[in-house]
Image (cartoon, rainbow, N blue to C red; front, side, top):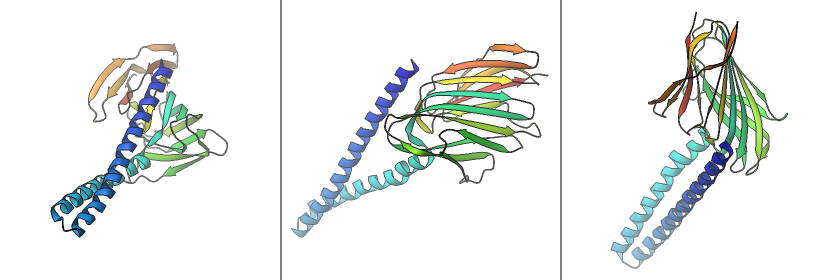
Length: 264
């Protein structure tokens, strides 16, 4: 099911990109022809037609400029438009004074791509360390937050060998998050708005004292509108631990929270 969804998602993303690129090229050609035609008409004293052609050219160039400045560059800088995630196997271990979050990604390249950009927010009072398990020569590096917000952590993972179209790659990212003063928010968020999409999210939570009373999966829209909230039943329990598991076919742009109510 997830594989079929992944293939359909990849297909329609590729169709959309090709259509958009075609429209972009057509506007580019119209702009050049209109500008040239305007000069020819003006030279032949057909001022009315010349002004109309130049006006069309200016409008087209304005559209192209808007695309460059507000869509293309931001999309490349802040997201991974050429990466699809077949599955994200996410494991969250929650302790009293720290949290360990592990993502095992199965990437698929929609086009040639040489990096993966990601970020996360840590509300705790201690440090956040990221460990990557991938190809030996892949390089993980932090990126300064452009808004200088200390709680946000941004990283880039540079692939040792660029992925070709339809090529796959598995990587594991582990966040070791320290919460010395026990101030971390009682939830963990995940979203796939930074990639082309995700076919399946498998989420496993393991709690250690203090154990939670209830655990929920909550879905929010991109504008933080609450869409759905349901309780997750425990799948395993011992004297000093409790485990939960849930699978989701994530919607691109939506934000998913696993939230818990702390016990004694």
